[in-house]
Image (cartoon, rainbow, N blue to C red; front, top):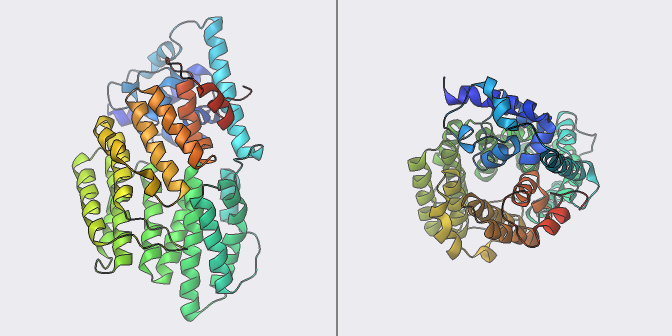
Length: 426
């Protein structure tokens, strides 16, 4: 039987043996309960960087989750529990689950500084926008630009408060407009939905699908290549995270081919599409395509330097390419190949806190995959320094918990875990 036919049942059986819910497992590895449900139903592929966390949470050999031999499901309970748990194991597991659950509640319900719009609430907003009146286009652009600044500064709680009203006002303004104003309003609406998709992706929420699809529909109505390219990028990310990496690469390649490469602005968009396509190909373990796309993006940067813009996020620089290269190599399972790139990387050149924090996140994952706990922790501290709310995301809290309960003692880690929500009650 094919490996992919068994992994969902394997995870479900091991989770049941541990007597934890989908929500509790999700909080340990940085996924929503709905994402765990889809993984167990083999409707979503497990991200490579999450597999080690999942294996540890379920007490399974990593190779069972990453492409090697998958045992009969009937044998999982024995392996997952290992033996009759003694008091120390029971206390340790209970502490881990309690800490993860409380950390998740703190970030989702909103009792700490990282409170953001909960994933479930975002889904409700998308399907039933609040009532709003149209507003003049310059005011709508200013509000959307402010929302983008909140995202790039990694102020996700601010963005969560802004999004419902922004989406409703942008929809009302677009619907009340015609001619050139309608096309411009559609572009702004696309930007607002892109922000909603990115916000949902941070929480691994299925709401990202809805927001990304609406972003692309609005972008196409605008007839403008930059909004279309950016909306296609976030839609491709949702495809990749659902396991449809080949569809993501196809979408990005098609959109990139339709851009005018002689125009610096659209050339920069093309580069960002190539970078996302490279990561998507890596998710499918297509090393040749992934590296070729990285090299093409690096070559394009020489001809199309980044053009700053207050409304749309288009970043096409050599530094950005290098960050993607580290992420791609991590995903391909060859993190050692990214060490030199990371050593030469000047993250301070990146223009926003969110991007700098993401770069340090990829470096943290690289060192974690290489088994260097101290370097992993150092990178996580940099994430916190750049963007305190970023380090409280579920996936990074899960990585911090994995370090905390790992075999290596790292000075300051426990305090960091308590401070960032990965360890409650400490």
